[in-house]
Image (cartoon, rainbow, N blue to C red):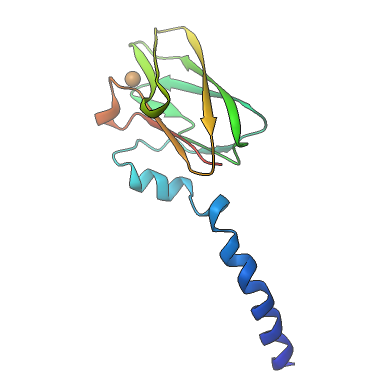
Length: 132
Ligand SMILES: [Cu+2]
């Protein structure tokens, strides 16, 4: 029986290696890589429209995972009392969100995680991450 186990492991090994493109990044690893990040949890994307709350110098949830590749619609609701912002520098997204308002931005998601920030509170950890 030991021999059977060895064969199964050898067969699975190439698939495990090939999976690194999609699921290597986790919220925890991205939070560490982009520190400081105020971590307000992870939610699985249920489609191409993602809604995030901006308040108290943080985005909630901080991470979405299982985000479909392609263009996603990010709705940012400012549920706090101060001005916030959503910025994806590489995609020329830079939009302010006044208290009580919601803005909608379109973000392209490929194989790598997409990091967005509030440019006013980035140093306080106001960072969000979309993980494909
Ligand atoms: Cu902010």
